[in-house]
Image (cartoon, rainbow, N blue to C red; front, side, top):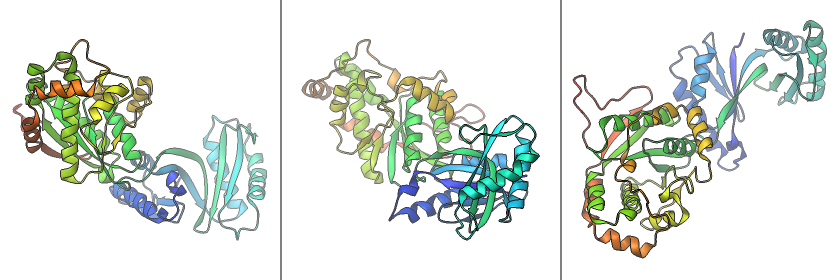
Length: 406
């Protein structure tokens, strides 16, 4: 029944002088991700993008579109000649398939101003022709079960009843690069997704502490990064794994136990800061939510942030945990995040960490640990994995030998 997927853009349409740049970027992202379907063709105008199906199944294409940020919606359409008889015929066929609906209305958008009727007149005329052919279906212009939409453009006339929501946001890679501090938990992948949704090209950073953290914990982070990569440019994302064991052991052996988490987080930010400078990355991103744990009180954030002057983006700062969980389920990272393998943030955790640290005391405890050389060593020994959502990556070989060592 459907021969075209009509795509409308998200909040990027609010842009003015650089709208064309946004438009070209999101269009190219759609094309790159949909190249795997050999029959389809692509067309676009200033405010619409069209995928000509040419007999291709629409469902797997929509699954791909569900990973493209910058889209407002996509509609499954029938393209018809711009006359009332053809428009009504297509509308009748579509509405007859939606047997669940009891009420409907017609909405028209007349982008082609040469069509000899206003939008309201088009809707009225089509409804008049459709209604006698639909037994049991009534008109309700206020709260209809279903809407028959007609989009009249200079490039064609499109009829549809199925309009699916897109992810919105800005096209991937349009807003610079951010370094995401990713653990194996629920929050950081969601923060990464929200950053991707705003057009930030995300580079992931993970701190591993073998033997305290296992290969399965690292595999979990790899799988989370691969899952996020579905929303990135060309479905690819880089993961940088930093060895963090010596730093954690030095802190555990020398600092006041109450200050361990604060000092540990400061070293993570020092490392992230240096990596951003080395790789020309614009901002640091993390999954912190205000007050969720001891290191995420405002006092703790202020003391921890003191080690860097780079911008730090916390997309989840005001989110409740339930909201974060729902988002993680929507982007399909939740089931990976709850695998029972601990990351470095869950080891050497004091029973009562300080929640309102004072900077002078933190520096005093930090100096006892002699961490400068260890931080430089960790940065130097970081290892990079280039991940693709199209290809699985394992830290194990067939005989269970680790092939990615920290």
